[in-house]
Amino acid sequence: MNSPEFIILCELLDHDPDFVSGTALARKLGMSRVGIWMHMEKLRAQGFEFEALRNHGYRIRRPPAELNPLLVQAYLKPRGQPLDLLWLPETDSTNAEAERQLAAARPTPFVVLARQQSLGRGRFGRVWHSPGHGNLYASFVFRPRLEPGRMSTFTLWMGASLCDLVADFCRIQPGLKWPNDLYFGGCKFGGMLTEARIDADQIRDLVFGLGLNVNHPPDSLPSSLSGRATSLAACTGQPVDLNRLTAAIVGRVFTAYEQFVDGKHRDTFADLWNRFDILRGNAVTLIHGQQRVTGIAGGIDDEGCLLIRGENGRPRRFSAGEVTLERASP
Ligand code: BTN
Image (cartoon, rainbow, N blue to C red; front, side, top):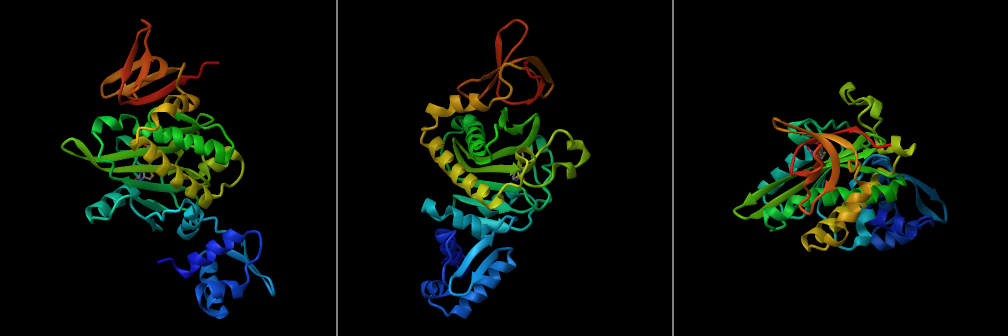
């Protein structure tokens, strides 16, 4: 059941920039104009600013800068299917919350969004620094019923799809550092962490975690990240509309997931990856366990393995590891 606030928001967005009269809203919701006013007050308490003009009605003057689940859902409405979106002001980790929801039998697909994480996790058990105010922390939960072998390119495909969206949305040229980092100007602004539970020979549950530094100032990050992390606002030079970006990302992740499961991503995957790959043609070092390999990155193969050409000129393929870009070719 849609809440009155959600219906009011959708009406105002549908008619924006025109005003919507209190009478029309009251008729739509089957309540008095005083009732409408009370729901508008609830939206104001969430950070919405409205213009209210006698004889004209209401329109949105400024949406909240903070992540607002109602507004994200309202932006997603034109997609048609309602999405199950769990929003939390704060959690330990959206991936951990997704696991708890799965354990409690929440039907898939669903999305967990949080404004802040106290134990955000990254690859190799690292911490994903997750301050409140302005960033995106999301986990997307699916039940793909695919063979585990099919998943080797999943995170890479998601990364390429997200770079494509960020390029469009923010008008910048982001980059991908194999396998799961989103970059701009030599600094990281996002990371992906895919975690799966596997049953015999099928993926049972898939949790795709995405952390994006959007509006939080990068200079307030811990000194260990200084000069290595950035935010989309810093990349574009202006604040990014977090709610519109979140809605666009949620829509894109669902589309990209469906394309992947249907195998429809295969036609475009290599081209999209190559468009954003920041390693290809550059000197890199890969560390995997005790192994340390240096050479020139040569893109990825069909299974998503990174190719590195050593001094003998022969490419070696790696399915996992931590890569450092030694120097970009001029
Ligand atoms: C990495 O670069 O190492 C991956 C970082 C992934 C961080 C995201 S934030 C949302 C989701 N919840 C988590 O605890 N981690 C992922």
